[in-house]
Image (cartoon, rainbow, N blue to C red; front, side, top):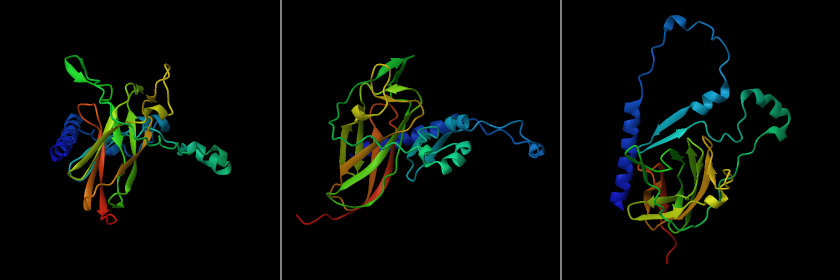
Length: 238
């Protein structure tokens, strides 16, 4: 299990290095033009949809996510004044897809394109926050947020893995049946650049102290994932 976690960390770290190496240097800023007035108003939505962020987390693991996903509960500046006087116009955040304890199916979705091995999930990012002070034997609950850069049918439904500490890991299948989006064929869908949140629940193993919790989406060559640190207290005496 230690080798698996180390391999995942190495893959994510290598992906971050390649991303940085591929970026063009920032353009020079003409200081003599800073006082010039912009020619027009820059559209708000396209800028947000095109933005991307790379978050470098301690220990070398990197999560890459677009900022143009599901902005439920956030209104553009032109709408905020109206919504303040009419609460009915405020959009409510969509609840996460509920947790289900579904066994992993390990679908083989690899195929070759232009001589390279690819999968349908290669353009999916995964982000989330994991933390807490928990008791061994209790339940850790968090949310995994998936986003695709294309309209992606979840067919087959992918698996994911949660690893805690050095000795515990387990794989499940995502609860695709309750994803609220569908394509024209009725299949569950990750819409392009729209966050879809999945509730996660896992029993905390009996390993006390600070423990690393790692979440990864199975399938892609470079597994998207994220991690956090929890503190585990001894459980009740058996």
